[in-house]
Image (cartoon, rainbow, N blue to C red):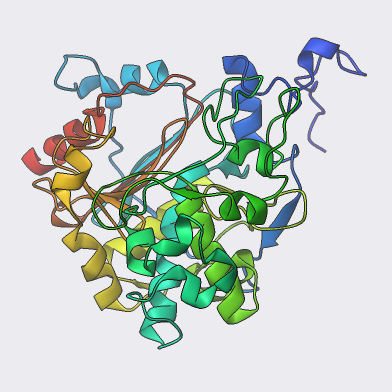
Length: 394
């Protein structure tokens, strides 16, 4: 029998300062890490991995030494990962894992918050529905959700929602933790406490319906979560299924994932399409490898190749350059994916606190980073580029 070791909690019941709640998860690096590592603060819906055996990841004999690879600032990639509060990091090149490591007490089998990287899964589901003729991306969202008629989000087409080109505004709120200032989505999802005298939306549907038109749809890039939530509503209206169920049927159960994933819910049980998914590092690497292989993985075509090709084309770079995401120089946003237009043909799913699934087709590389970075820099890190350039030289 394996010997029993002491738990990380030194006192039971735990001390008040050791308990992470909706009132304090965003107040310190330690609490944020616990929030990212655990989905216990909110209700969730399981995304089942299916009953098949996990696909085996192949590990290269010679693993990368990230202490010896420097970014453009002369900092080692390992130091970069530690400085940016990385919880887990994996590099796959030519189908083999060259590096896999875990930090800050995070375990390989734990689900990690993906936050806005969830949006990229929504983009795939919407594209599949369009591919099957269930929706027309050129129709307004209010065509599918009549309740949206007269709202800011109802004015945009499905494609404009996919590309974050429906500029809207919401009731301004000043939440106690500071996160989500100027938009009530975090209160609507029940993720944080409501400020005093709050009179805003109490769930995601109310949040979507509260949107007001700011600019003409299709004339600017405006990244915000309501557009993805509107897509989530359209998905459910057309299929009668929850987003988690569709991700399970179409993607997760076909990957040969090791673990179930999870979708967090708002207070009335609605899937948080804009940022509710949680998964493990290895399973996200499997997903990234599927995207790298143009939708083919585990012996089957999971996503049609032309849907992946369309993502890689990217969107309107001028609009993004004129937005508050102008620090992502050269980027565009298309079908809920960030497209970097770099020399590696890179595109990525990205989420708050520095979650990233980066796919570099021209370098045959997938890099996954899961983090609890409270204050990410507005400057794009060069760690990923340093790794790929190192591999290219070899």
